[in-house]
Image 1 (cartoon, one colour):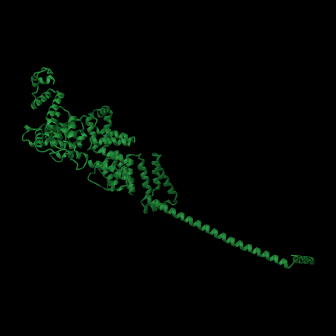
Image 2 (cartoon, rainbow, N blue to C red; image 1 turned 90 degrees about the vertical axis):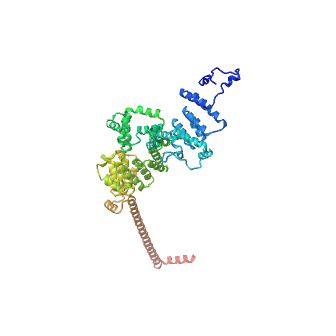
Length: 615
């Protein structure tokens, strides 16, 4: 043994060797349990944690010679907490699976994970059944049959004297309030103010167990300090700091980046994205270098940084890497809707059906956010669910313009308040929401509401005159209404802004071809505007009329060919009759010449007779 250790106990510090007598050896065998405790406390008071850790391990090894004891193990974990051996504490408790058995081990395990900055693991712990109060943001164990459940069932339950001793330790050290303070600090670091408020309030309310403030727990004081520091409870006039905070808000320094960042965050939550971008851009120009360095080096679990990195990769079409960044941000910020929303958007971009699940989960976290409504409407529009898409787009627009009372209103109600007022978007609506207005025009066109679609696209073009998507959609709506001249003009405008877009070029060629098929355009305009309101129906009628024209042409050709055939037959019959008449005349002439020979003598007659006789 080192000589200085025995000097601490006021013993003889002369070195012992093998040549020493047995009496000298017996002088050093005087240690008992109280001596270990005093020795450990003495080294802790001196700040020598390494030597204290050695004696803590040595004392627990002596106690464990007769077997494992839960109470001794709990005291061992408590002593290791004093010397800040957090990795060993987490490994030991995890190996014995005791953090789900009693609140004492749950506190020491959560405290070790907190000091190791493993905030995600703390949030995912399933120790809700150990809580002394209800409605706390702590997960409860799943009733499944997984591998963890098998390991938990393999460990013995704590009962008898051990349970009484652990309960006494929990009550004496007030570990429940301490655990709630650790959870509150964790949720504050993860920027979940709601859950942090609930945990710190539960810790603070433990004051009711004591009659006077003389016995106020230090954990309750820490919870009260955190509630005041982060303003997790509403301030009242009774608060001593209320007037000072109110005065500071009025006389706030606009050059302070912290206050400007807070103002930008408030504007972003309210949907004023353009003003948020202006403020954050100015902050990045002035303090960007320092802020980026702080975010990248001093805080590795910076969820917003991973979201921004995912945006960069998504802009470069690196879908898998962007999803990895969004998933990591979702683990760091489990109660924020932005990571889940961006995961759903990315899945929708690559055409995966899982997008609906993530968008719905983001909507459960923040159902009143117009951005989520817009993205869900875009998802349903992609899969041809136009009625549902119209409902989400309408709700998003109502939330943006401030009409929060209406839930699922028809787009006609929005037109009365929004579309029919010419200067409305220029005064109240942010240009950030121009795609929302344009999408309302698209979905109205797909539902056959062509006039409403044109009104929405007119508003969208007022907000962004270079939007060729709105021009092309307006051209389609005008074509469906039969106003092909106006449709052609808008197609030409859209094509001038997107000259390499094949869809617009094909639509313009098709519209020109349909105009050439009908010479009487006035009749077509009248019939199209009175009998139909659907582009497909117009195209079907035009196709049917084209078939009728083709049938009439076939009939005319058939009649013409038939008449020509009849003419040929009649001509051939007449020709045969004339030929037969000519042949009969020739035969008659030949027969008359043989009966009445002209200019023939007797010798000729005799020669003929002799010739016939010879034959």
